[in-house]
Length: 117
Image 1 (cartoon, rainbow, N blue to C red):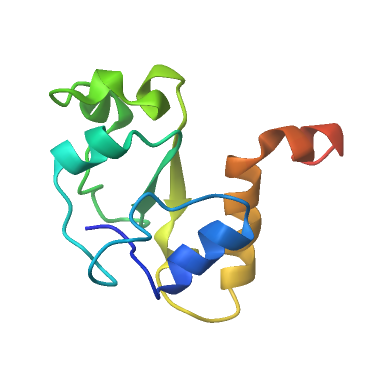
Image 2 (image 1 turned 90 degrees about the vertical axis):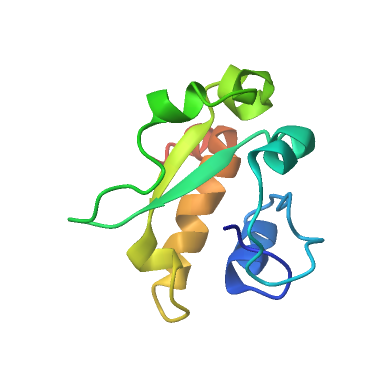
């Protein structure tokens, strides 16, 4: 599943200076295939993670070994990230934290030049 059009996650990605590869999906929460991800070739992949809950997607090493995923720019360039699902999965005040986290992931060069962490 991914975030699609009309979701707060899609809006946060845009506000952070990114582009959601599924912003044109036919639903807000599309079920997407590996083939669709490979074809759209994201530069960055961000996975949710919840404290105390096993990661449904496994580990970065498992993701890298998925058939065909070695051709994805995010895999080739080591741009795989985790975001705390508590700050991004529900609309509310913590979305500001999610926006800052996404901005740092999408544009690390801006934050490094400003001395940010």
